[in-house]
Image 1 (cartoon, rainbow, N blue to C red):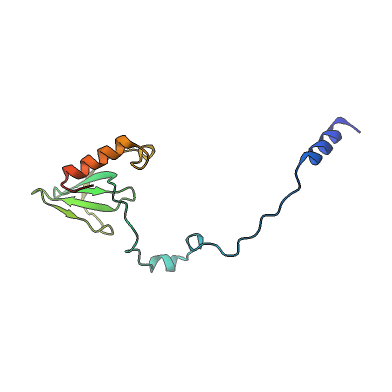
Image 2: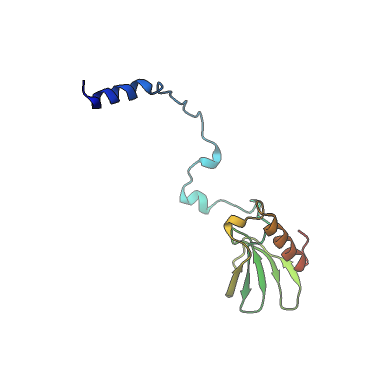
Length: 129
């Protein structure tokens, strides 16, 4: 028996017997595959919106818009200073400037400094966190 064959035999003996993992009885609905038609015809209006601002857009007409990490608008501040809640499904036209408040690795759920910054931004806009 040569050295190579002996090594294979020892490795084969050292391996635990292969265990078969049970097949899932049914996949959870979130992992289900959706067709394009299903996705286009699904009403996502009841989906929760992350309320933490990720950045700010400035529009051509002077409005400032806070948006979340999913780029859904949260709040709109008009040039006269009035603040209104935005429809998270709305499309914001005329964006001329975009800035971000935090990086992905500084998510407010994990970073206290970012949490304080986000809360201060909301207070400055007149919206309680």
